[in-house]
Image 1 (tube, rainbow, N blue to C red):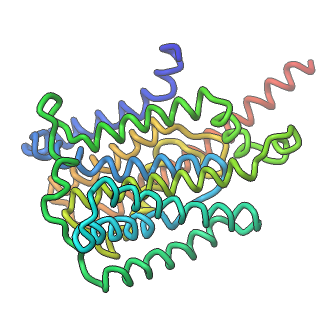
Image 2: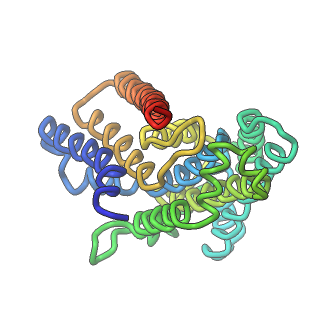
Image 3: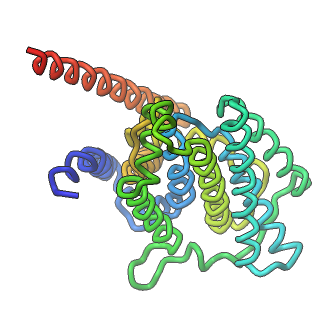
Length: 325
């Protein structure tokens, strides 16, 4: 990717994030402290992983409302296997990731193969995952103590958690797959015009199902980092998590209509959401103020997305008219 393309695609989001940091840094003496920045870094990995999956689903013009409850179920299962079943952490982690993949497969098969809107399907699996979380946890919090400390403890060289590095690496790999491989280009094409892609001989069904499976797997992986940060899990762990993911992805410029999205910009959207939340808390803003401002930012991002789409259509029509002349 050339420098001009890089600056066009990613620089605006990065600049907005830097402005927020400087703004809250000037309003609060403690915002730029290592403790605050470390707290934000610890919150990034679970949300980023879920946002990666959400970005892919929105690109193919779908949506997944179940990721929060699936994350809670996987985290509860993970902690239960460690604390009650005495499973080794790696094996319990694989079980949690597999459970997320199963939920993703169910979402994909029912939504794509049976032509049921993903909004309805994932709303149903949201309730199923939440109910199963209550069942296996007996409505209690399952704690694991410090058994997962290594996943969130800062590395001696970089000073950031290994979970952050894993999340960042997955973002880079995912962006490469999305922008540089046939699979990624097919996903974008499906979100733009699925009928045309199907007529071109591309197996759109299984590609769309695979996106839901990947999202479930990423939710399972995110649950491990979430449980490690909190030292346990319960059925309420993922409450509102899907909304935070959608907010970050939309702020990152992914179109709700499909056909456009960037994992790197979704990552920057996560940084903006978490920085905004931490900054407002540092300056003493009430809880309702944080929700209102975050909501306004989301609406503004959607409006800008719509305006950008309309402007693009007008420019295209103008170009076609000039060619005809």
